Image (tube, rainbow, N blue to C red):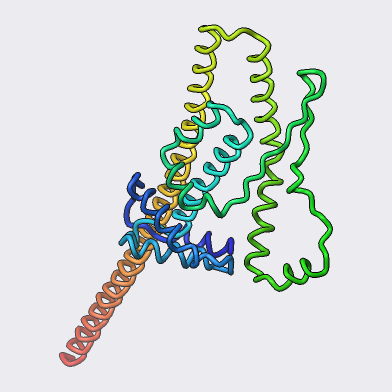
Length: 282
């Protein structure tokens, strides 16, 4: 799979394509409507994104690896905001999610297919000590024979999807723990201190800064992706120009050799004729 993606990434592009908001909106709608194309089998995702590129008339302007990266970035940011919204239970967490312009479209597209399980907080007697544990739904209960048979008879794709989602959630636990710890400590301080106009102003400023940081990180990721795409295009163009120059040099040298041979043959013929003429005079 990695080899196929690298091959797609190195395909020649005649020009750099500027990805627009309309392209993003179209990609989200198309990906939700054509989820059946992405079966998890080898090269299925690349074939699906090739179909999308053909439907949009973008052949030769973008490649499947580029479109796949765009979709993965959208899905990752949606997951992060969804989890932050689930664990914060505050207006700040709600606003962080809804302030992203693609959140509602991603919610309609894949909101019902993701497994978002926030951690459970257990507050100790000290405000500085916070214990975190996985929710009961994360603990694997003992399965009876009927349930085991049902899971074994389920389609392999569904089992793989469930395992992939569970692995992704477990991989983000540490990051969620840090974010939740910060949120809970901030809420605890708010309860202990009187709510003043200055405190509300500071909270709004922190929220704005958090949203700006998130948007800046997202835009920087998009810029890096576009820069890598442009560099790949330039490398391919350089290789193409070098190949053309080598070919032209080869044909030029071949013509020079042929001209030189023709001149040498003509000179030999002239010398031979001159020798014959001298002999005939004698």
